[in-house]
Length: 286
Image 1 (cartoon, helix red, strand yellow):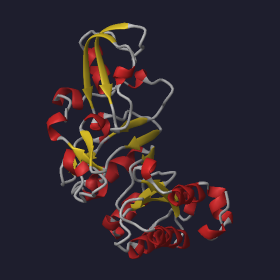
Image 2 (cartoon, one colour):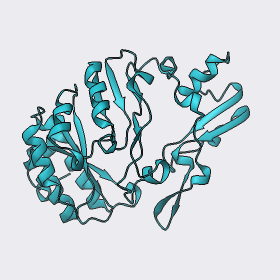
Image 3 (cartoon, one colour):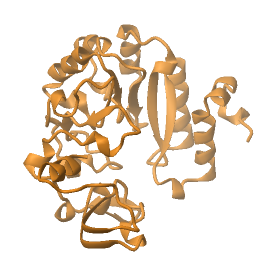
């Protein structure tokens, strides 16, 4: 959308790619390495420019490796342009990054390698929001940014409904920023419990005591599986979160290689009405 806004600003005609049309220039982006390349289509263009995380990742020994030499970034003037939301008229929300980078350096994640191990502010809300009623934030670790309290105030003062799509870091919550989060209008708050060796129970208890989101339907926690965890460790996190009043959501690392039991676990947990009606995984029948 930023590229579209830039090209329209210099008088170019822009549309979403149609493989039957001919173009001077086509941009292609991939988020995941396993996504099909645009070359599966007969692209009729004088030039194709490719970018995005998916083009910078290769799989080595079963792990994703980030190649910084293939990493491409937008020019500064394009990065900070207001997005061309008219490109997707079916959606009426604003979306973007307030911060980039994450200090966690998790083995399953490329953010630290791509954006750095320090969370830093890259924009004010006004760069990509102009009154839309909903905002979808893409930040990898907003609370790790030293300016996060200022940014939370911007979000609360917008009056828009905020979706922290990538989740917030429960380990960085405290009474002060929980108070600010309480002032932000949300439908649901996302957290994550990825490492089974790290007991995050005290942080989830504290948030439960201080938050004004009291229903488990408004508090979701991503639970990573198939990455350095046993089934028992997965179940411990799932049961603990449920007992604390959160709604766990199972994510599978490299799902195509996951054991059948982990795929069953995901179906049981993520199908809410089954999860609520079946107290133990061993009672679940497909």
